[in-house]
Image 1 (cartoon, rainbow, N blue to C red):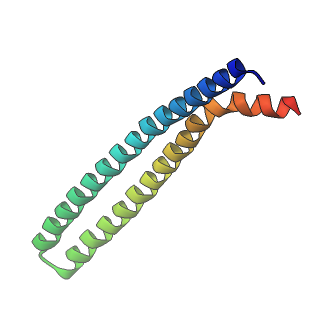
Image 2 (tube, helix red, strand yellow):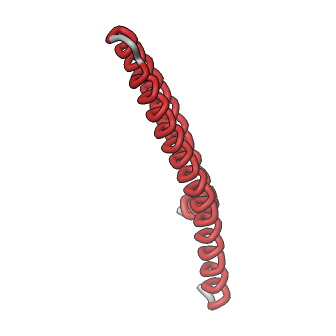
Image 3 (spheres, rainbow, N blue to C red):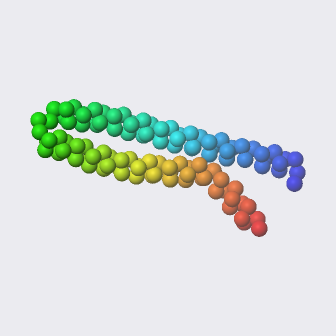
Length: 110
């Protein structure tokens, strides 16, 4: 292996790492934004449910409000967990892409 080969290898490795980091950074930002939005929505939903609960005129109405809140909270959580799962899968795929070529070179060289 020549000095030029080593320099090219180092350059390629750095480019792959930077591309991977860029993809990771972009995806991580999307995940953090999603979590922040969900948290805000959750707090707002809790506050609205408390207002309804405090305004309930009977125990039946209070139970209905609580039941509706729990149902919607669960549905929102499941939807959010699914969405975050997809974002994490996308993160892994995007972070791995720059290394696919290098791995193909290594496996074909054997």
